Image (cartoon, rainbow, N blue to C red; front, side, top):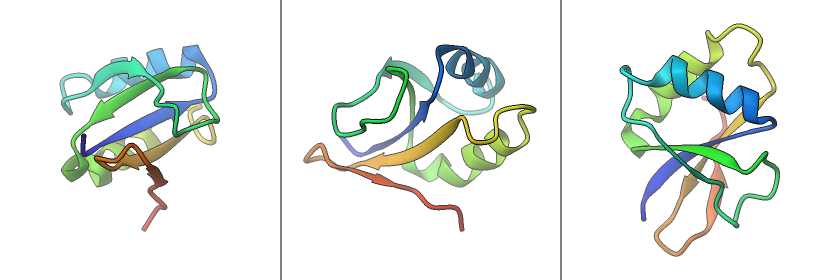
Length: 85
């Protein structure tokens, strides 16, 4: 599976982000993959091509700074953090 996920430090942050991103990007709630260790257990999956837009949308969400990280999941299950450009 080649996709990106946003992982969150709290369930509340995940729910706020889902509400903020739904309708703007094709996000799907999913359990956090095992390859990512720091998380509340809830993640949002989205296509890799939307990573820049999703990051920009998350950065404009009030109070969300420092509560999330974006990772790209490779088909082999490995997760690599996407560092801001």
